[in-house]
Image (cartoon, rainbow, N blue to C red):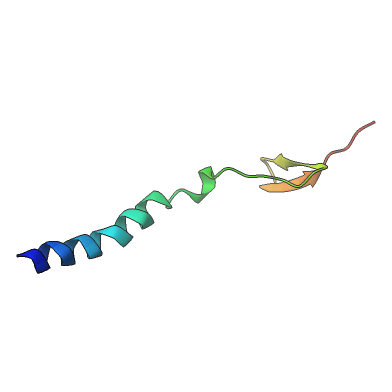
Length: 50
């Protein structure tokens, strides 16, 4: 019985981790200094001033 519970726990852990990482489009994005996130391009673009 202990082995069955252990086996189920080992099988369930990767599934749980995978389920939490399924929404890559909602991850926080950090751009380098001098750039900002462009939602339309889905990329960091240079900040234009002036």
